[in-house]
Image (cartoon, rainbow, N blue to C red):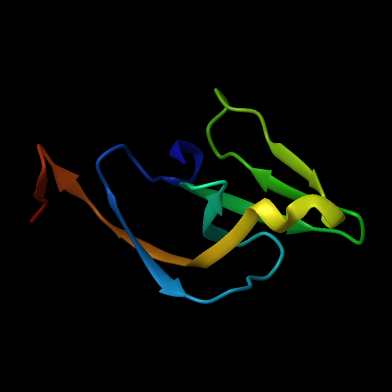
Length: 87
């Protein structure tokens, strides 16, 4: 999520909820792997947009998104330096 200002080692703060609005960042469980992605829903497609240009967006037909579970809405981060919370 480097494009969203979230760096490796940061601690994401997540508000537990099962749905989010289009364009919001969410913690998502994809077949047992958790990730942060920006969510876009249409009538026939679920798009999990990466904010890192090194990764492609993930696209799923709405009728096949039972492998995708929204864990919660991204609220912010706690920045860390060398594994410790930054002052």
